Image (cartoon, rainbow, N blue to C red; front, top):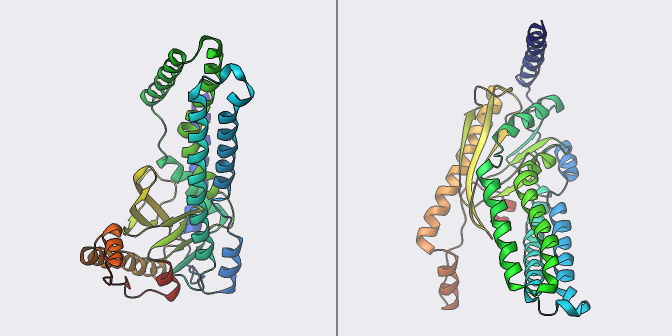
Length: 328
């Protein structure tokens, strides 16, 4: 009996999802609101995705400085050099990231204030929220092996600290190990969900240009990308098309690969053709930049050329707006 009730409830949920899918397939001629007053107003309301990062960096600087200063106020810990190095390292790393996020924040603000964009898609709340729920399926979760490896690493670090620390200060290993465990839990369990926090913030829009985009509340900036129109997987609740962008960037942690999809707000031929034009523009931009890099070399080669007094060919791809050209 309980099984039949559960099946009936599941069927009701499926029916609701089908209604939402029908809403997303309504043909609308105003899918792209680029250039309108409504677009300017919405983009002015988009929250800065880097605001939280500033707070985290400031907390890291303060916490690192406090840890480094503890031995100055506690004479019995003056021989525990690892605390000073740990604190200074944390503060310095947080400071570097603060400048990195400030630069990205300025790029984002400039992008939102840009006069013209290729695409500005606005979504109905019901469709967008269902889309975010689908995207959550793609978020990778930590495996049991990864959790065991992290826990094992913390135990090893604590053991080394116990071996190197004077006998009277070994009690400090417990709070330090707890801090390391807390940081590990943040990276393993909270960080994968972090993008969803931004995705749920209104207004619900996607902004796409040839080398930067705002998708699911996250700002992207790339020099080379591969774009395509793709269908959602069969197990997704929303059955439709998305503008998928796959790109690689260099970060402080090394090379990072990203793949993000901007949901087409409707399935009209006009919207599909519009998305296809942007796909071609992104791919052409990437090809032109790759050819330009072959002629002029990487950033270090170009720097040495300028130092030697040689001219470096400016990168001016075809079909770009003045604002996009300035931000390349």
